[in-house]
Length: 414
Image 1 (cartoon, rainbow, N blue to C red):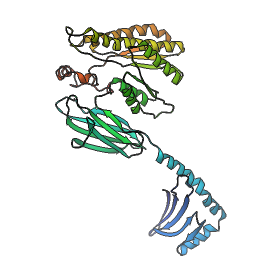
Image 2 (image 1 turned 180 degrees about the horizontal axis):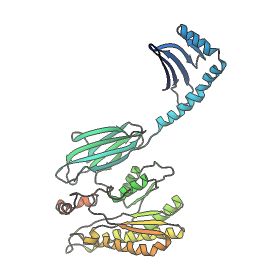
Image 3 (image 1 turned 120 degrees about the horizontal axis):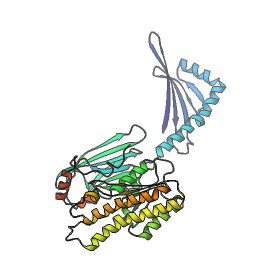
Image 4 (image 1 turned 45 degrees about the vertical axis):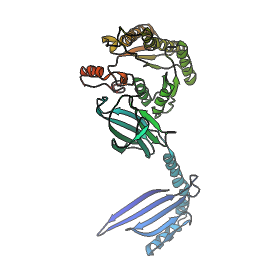
């Protein structure tokens, strides 16, 4: 490996004369025990004399080079300085160089459609890998776990403009229900290849976690599906000092499970969560006249009771700890206001979430705890992936943009 610094002095008279002082630091071992410091004096591209730390003196190669070499060798301070620069210049800078070369930063990966994605229609999917280092990376598309090559439109590698890189890959295909499309990313910063599924495990909750991590927060990813929680965990950035993320399985409809979650957070971070986002939600759609009581109860248990249990447990922890402030955000739905055919259970649960949040805000404000409810519209998530195309067509027809929203698209402003 060579680290080079070059200094040039240009003097112009009738002709152009260029004098260069070229410094090289050469090494091959990580402990720098074989470090060699070299200086070359070049005049108009001709080597006059040079210094090599292994020799310990200047050597001249022509008349003027010999004169310069003798001049420098007779200056004790100059020779002392050259000897010291093996340590002060070469080794000092090489340590920084090695640290940079061995740094590994895992990519942040997102998969999305570049427009309105419809089953049975030609669609372009995008896989974006950001902020990774070093530059070597491999991005491939998978269809039901098998690698796809023929439908890949393009893959482009870009320099971020600083120390990191980005990669963008585009896949054009006809989507079919029941077929899993994923993007696989292989990079030295990852212990194993990262596979991100389009439309799978990438709902509003994941987008919230990613944004909070980007802003510098330590994030706890809690999901009934612990595998999905761990997939989200792998996507979270660690760019800020002190960030420590964790993933955990939780059943929000179980009081015992929720209380264990809050307790584990306090033991890990020595404080209750300062911000809590209730994004858990399920659907079990059926017309009112055909819906089973069990399907109604299950949706209410997760969406409404789960929001109650999490809000209660977190607010209790904040009050008990004497926290000066806290924020609890619940995720309702526009369906809770306007209703939707085939979703009497879901719309009831989300309407209840809004009412619960209004009441919680009134009760908890005196403790410095803010409570807010967000009402998303029709968002492309694994949950809406189950909605029939006919229903999607009717809903998107009344949306000004004519398409579903993206999980991260409208959550934050600023």
